[in-house]
Length: 488
Image (cartoon, rainbow, N blue to C red):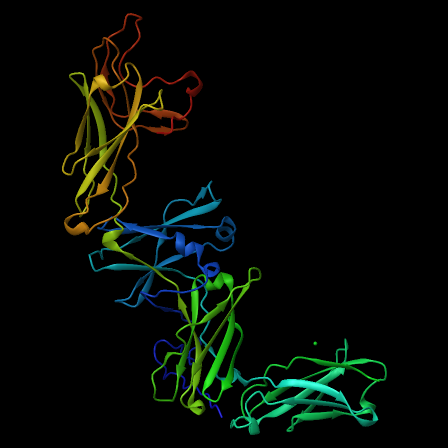
């Protein structure tokens, strides 16, 4: 018969040590999960992490406002070299996404480990249950073909069969327990027998009532099996529910249930040791998952062969679901610095400074008319250039224009580097020259405080038009916008 054991403190790192009672979830890198679509973690799917390839990694994900209010998720970085985890510290305030009513949450992790062969591994830290030892939960299969028939003198004969073939070594070792009662009553009458039949005496039954009965089996060790289906007659019904069943002499099937919410972040695998000196190994190659369309639980099951059932030890091991990012493929550079625009000889010269970066960058310029929304343009600036000339003749006269710049990663040799563009710089605004004017304008980004826009380092001189109004400098504020922040 199966003899299950556990030697505390002698198990491999995958197994949870039982001598200290600590909870531990392992980190398993480069793991691919083959689960039904309904069990995929939407939070982990939405997780994106980008770095400046110099000093930090910045991650963002989407979670429901309800989850954030009740128990905000915490993202952790896993350092496999030092075998430790570090919190990715919150960055900014969560922002509500109007498209799907989800909260976008950000965090930043400071590190100096970057390179072509360097990967950053992140996981969401949740409560981690202890490894579940299933050794004592092994049970045989329930009896089959339970039936009833009336015999002489009002006796009811219940009979059934072993769940294993007559030639199986398990069959002669089984004992049985029969429960019967009057239907819809609470108390059962329990009888244990070694044979595959039981006679319910007439005196034990009430005439004119419906009865029901069931039977279960047990070997020389372990738990009772599940109950057989009921049979009825008339006289003249962490992981949880974890269990393992001997399907055959050398085949065991284990099953367990996990809440959907927990299954997003943890995967439970069976770990087996076939004797006390053998290393622990994964029991099942393919774990079956049943995912009802409704209900909070997912049910898992798997079958595996056993070499020596008397020495078998089975444990249910939790591992954290992770998402891996190649650092050189997820570079998001910082935005350009000190953007300024100056009018020279009737044209507008846009300049900026290069942000700190360990990779080569190119740039993209976006400028548009604040009065004519369709007058908008995107221009790409080649690598190594930090200025752009905007022809004065290409602009509508006497209109307010705004311009902003962002940085892009240059792929380099062999397309080694990848990543999205940086954030746009704050818009810089200027007013194009009228039909006849004389002005020199030098502007830098402005900020809004207390509902009023403040322009920094503004130097300009103007000549008056025929109407006597200024023709250069800050874009005019529309009457309905006066006294409010312009939001650039």
